[in-house]
Length: 617
Image (tube, rainbow, N blue to C red; front, side, top):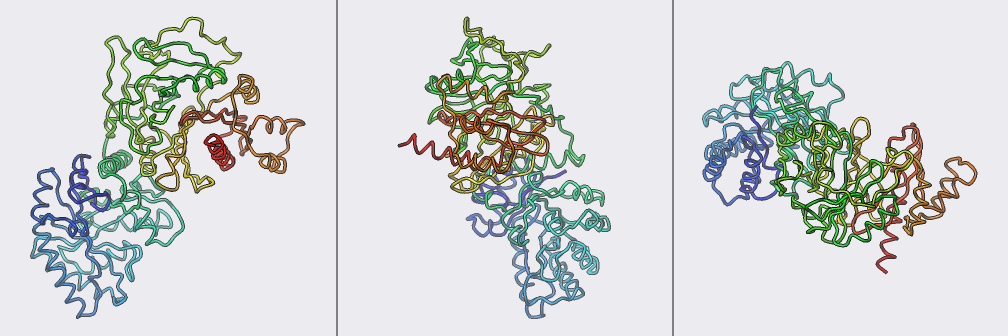
């Protein structure tokens, strides 16, 4: 189906917005009136610019407070409408959005509203324009889609139809039965469809609408269910995005347009409109790659954690460190990944050791790459020697390179073939090597890429998005949302600070799963490593909340081990000090614990702030 996006959903000048929409692959745009008013281009020049970019102008919006008015005010409204229709003639737009009135002077009279909308449609028809009447969720007298349709139906004008907006409908819906009325609207009378998602907070619906909409798949609405109902009516117009969001209005138009287009592709896949390559859900983390100018601090830490340097890349200054199934690559080459990282991504290696790439075990790397490209995440260009193993990578929204790879599987290239053994460096195999692996990788996101990152990992990689969690930091709130595989072998908690500068203060971390966190914590301290010190007050509180075996709590106190418990099991974890912008976490999950110790996050964050101050001093 034809796809469109409202210019209000992108940041920048109108020219920038149009260019971004075209480059992302949209077929058309809704021109938001404020964007037109602020543009130095005349309507005919905007029309020509859209034509050059291959964009149609699918809608002009909004026209407000036009119906159920006293006679004198309605005459002024018609005068205003005539002027807008002249503008639309210049634009080449043939549909105008009319919102249900919010004026305190409007009267509660459906018959009057229908009559005045019919007169408006008469005028519009003279210009070759259709009127799409939409119920605002906060409309003074008309606030539901079925009420708006009754007025349109009563008017009975061929140039008057309705516009369905997923936000206005779903924000008022109490259940699927509230959508049944969509099936009563003939498809040809649905002149336009606007799509948006939103989180499910409790707030005034107007503020909710104006500041917190998001693209489909990024919130809590059943946008797919609504779309399926609309399609069953026979609607054949554009699928258009209209998102009002404070973050989107400050983010770059280009990446936002790509994010928007990806959301529509996934929505079309979910509703059966579009067939995309099936996701090849990753089955594990093959490696995490650290880039550093000075390898000694991080390799010393890895040694204390039980890793050994086992191999070196045959053509690049990259060492492979292993313990059990956990693998860390230490790259001391030029401190720049193949894909430039966005400013403020939290992943730049310019200030020391940084996590820049993750290898994902893929059941079918080629299929995973095809899906990524279909969802506008093209495989990154890479320089490789003729003898190097073919290895594709895509860029996550934060710039992290995600390699699609296989480890030790028949008929698939093994990325380790590019590494040569480092004689004498092998670590004696532990009793149960499989018990030590990468449990999760926590990725700090740029403040304006959080929702996009969740959609990317869910849509491109096929991971499941968990509920969003707010975590208290001493200097504000951190927002966190984990994306995981069904079996928990791949876990990425995505985090973002409460303000644009917060993400730059937070390091990323790699969590290592062990079956004995106490033994591994002691191993590290014996090797001269340091664990993050935890205040005594925390352990006093633990003693009040949980019962422990004799000496158990004292051991945790001495080593800085934190503890949590959920309905499934217990969680013990501790943290190393930060090296550059990376730190490690040792985690022990017992009896199926599923979380990440979120209850302990405020204590950990406060301890890290204290450690940073003491280091700075």
